[in-house]
Structures are given as C-alpha cells and as structure tokens.
Length: 137
Image (tube, rainbow, N blue to C red):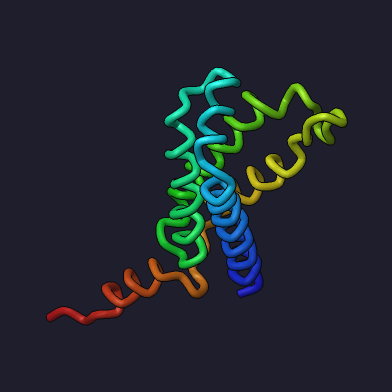
C-alpha cells in the first residue's frame, strides 16, 4: 500500500506539472512557442502537439488514465527536451538558460510510472477492476 501511495503522489505531481506547463504555453501565446521551436530547428507546428500533449496528458495522468503509456510519452518528451534544448546549459544552468535538473526529475518520475504504474484512485483501475470483478457463468 505504501508503494501505491508513493506512485499516486508521483502520478498526481507529474500530471499537474505537465498540465500547468501546457496551459502556460497556451496562455503565454502559443505562437511565441511556435516561433521558438522554429528558432531551435524544430518544426514550429510541433509546439501545438507538445502543448496539447502536456495539457491533455496532464489531466489524464491526474485522473489515472493510461498512466504507463502517457508516462512513457512524457519520458520521451523529457529526453528530447534535454538533448535538444537544455544539455548545453548543463545540469544547473549557465546563467542565461535553466539547466536540465527539472527535466531529469520529471524523466525519473515518468520512468517510475512506466515501470510500476499507479492504480490508487485511478480511473483506469476502476474501469478494469469493475470488469475483472464480474462473475461470469
């Protein structure tokens, strides 16, 4: 039970952080993010996908829907962000750009959830448990 409480804390924290990052991208002007993606050599429209994934995927994680799959996608997103944007700034940053310490923490959380999942207070668990608890004759 302790490990499920820990997984719930990680899932809710990871979901909330990604949700707020996605929301900030839209509230701050997604076109600015599109331009920034272009400036670092990524396709600008990819910004819509990333922001949408963070927003919708964050909500889904909060609810416990597709935790392992979404966490795997978020892990890949953090690897990409670290390698493409933050690695050159170093772990703690270089004064002009933040480092990749937060990305590394989010990556570790996501990997934990890929490996272990999170069933406590999870919509997916309620749906699948309901099916598996039915007695068929």
